[in-house]
Amino acid sequence: MEWTSPQLRSLVELTRRGTVTAVARSLGYTPGGVSQQIAALERSTGMELLRRVGRRVELTDAGVTLAAHAERILATEAEAVEALERTRHEVSGTLRVGLFATAAAEILPLALRRARETCPGITVRSRDMDVDDVYDAVAGGSVELALGLDYPDVPLPRDASLCVLPLSRERFSLAAPAGDLPGRRTVALHEMRERGWILPPAASYYGRAALTACRRAGFEPRVLHEVTDTAATLALVETGVGVSLVTDLMLRLRPSQLDVLGLSDTVERHIVAVCRSVARHRPTVAALVDVLRAAACAPAGEQGRQPAGEGGVALG
Image 1 (cartoon, one colour):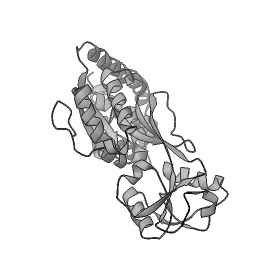
Image 2 (cartoon, one colour; image 1 turned 90 degrees about the horizontal axis):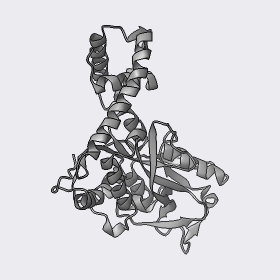
Image 3 (cartoon, rainbow, N blue to C red; image 1 turned 30 degrees about the vertical axis):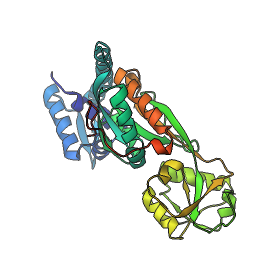
Image 4 (spheres, rainbow, N blue to C red; image 1 turned 90 degrees about the vertical axis):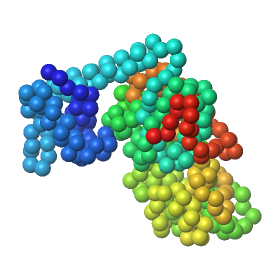
């Protein structure tokens, strides 16, 4: 029998996610691409691995058995990659990295410049994605490392197969229309109970974290504009239609004429790196995590937006 890692990974992800559509979203394939991977696996094994039940599909006994072994095969493959990297005289290799928009704009450029200086043998291929999808992307194998956000009020799900590594911590402030709160430098969340809010959807981690903070302060925010994009949120605050929560990193995305007030309430988010546990000590992964941590903690003046083009570090 012959099979490929993408075929085995598609089968394993199907046991986790239950639908071909969810697997496709996790792995960055089309649903048809996932079906082709499973079909090729069935041809190789000569056995039916999936059966259709109404509109759903489920694994056969053979599919369940192979999926269990596939997890071990993929883990062994990751260990082999780490072992091979350690035989090299320098830290070198290619890493696929998943990034949410703010990290791509504000952290990655500086990280690439620093990587070019400290570990020029590493090539980075990046992929922009929704911040709530990075955890699944690493679990599914579509990227080997990802930058994500973890909220103490709504923590990421913890999976023994994945490792969540803290990079930096940010405290939220309040963004308000310029001149809306004259003479104030700090404010408590409960004082904003009557204001209109600009927040992300409640189904997102950030949305749930914001709602939790407001509810802890004793009120339900009156969300007038449900917005995911940070730059759009800042623009709406600037026009005077509501208030929102912001961090220093978020404010770098768009020069805005608005007031930023400190919150007496503690509302935080953590910038994290996510990788598979078996890959945590891969020389390339460990080196890039160190570079990303330094970039995430760098003062605003050190951030840059020029992609690296020489020295082996590429933005793909």
